[in-house]
Image 1 (tube, rainbow, N blue to C red):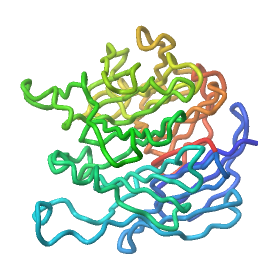
Image 2 (cartoon, one colour; image 1 turned 90 degrees about the vertical axis):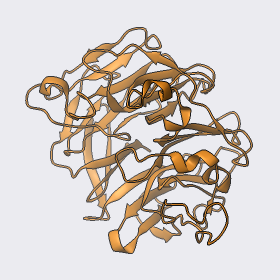
Image 3 (cartoon, rainbow, N blue to C red; image 1 turned 120 degrees about the horizontal axis):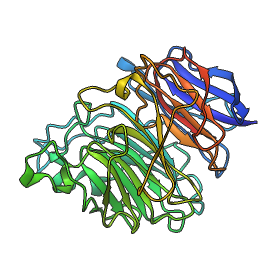
Length: 364
């Protein structure tokens, strides 16, 4: 039975099942906040990031699907320079949260990426035993203009590795736009052309370095197709992010945080709308999932099995995922709801209303 990993404020839950028949099979790190989880398809290892308050961030690895866990090194910044252009950097040089983890390419065994708050990008070449800050991105002149997207400081929440070329990596920053490297991180380019930030004055709305992509995903079968749920709407790129096209907002709203893309069909994607930035609840208290099958030209809103009255669930950036079959979806909220769909989001089955706030879920 396929595992579903659910990272919450009070531990990591492992569910097993198929279709809409799922049940909690295990609970790890009970009571401890898990901020990110990654299942590495290359060797089957699981990784869990924890935010332990005074004890800092921690990272765990399991080689046996959670039967045992090993503590490994967590990403950490080098000492802040005391002289030179970064000496007066007001951003803390300490990792507050590991926001996302990503596996390197199939030809890079042991390579992992970590995106953090503040917006440091870290890389490991030895299964997480050691981590190195990517200084080329951290030292970009525009990095010090990045803003916190809901947190005090900017953070990297999305990392996608091109399956055709492991040296081609794309990251999304809230708020700092979309950045890409084609040489494994030695050089970076800002690739947010076409995005607009309506929270800025009109003259600055096109500033790529100030964009707030809430979540970025890539179609596995067509890696040049990228989808973004942006603070100001939905965007799609057909050329690897070199140019972004805004999508007309579907009913009931174009605001949201989560996006999932069919791994085989680049024209199909799912979104979970909320009312607005200043009112982060479902429109009219009705929870729906929007799906496009034609690249964003049109949308269908599905609600069967979802709460339709007095629903106040917010599905955060990493609260939506689709399995490799393109049909099974999982969705969870910051108020502890968890739902599964076996028919591409058209019907949903509630699994739990009582989980802790969910930070991330991923099919393993």
